[in-house]
Amino acid sequence: MLLWSIWHNRNDEVWNDNVQMPNQIGRHVFDAWNMIGTQFINYIVTTRVGLQNQVYYGGKNQIQTG
Image 1 (cartoon, one colour):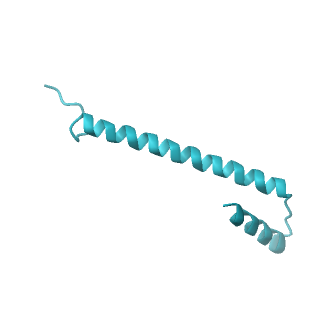
Image 2 (spheres, rainbow, N blue to C red):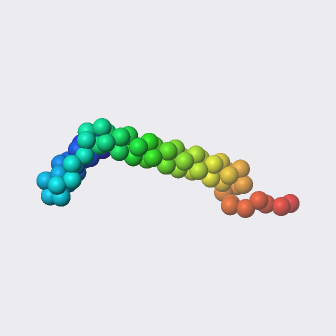
């Protein structure tokens, strides 16, 4: 991700004359990485809860009444 951001910034500077400081690029990468990590953790937790519910309810998505 860092290498892509550096390459993207280089192209932005060459083609659009838009220059960013290295710390701005680093901060952008850091924020993006944290956002991706948070989304991944939320996905894992949601998937785990969904699988636990399927096992608990016998593979069905609703509560069985007896």
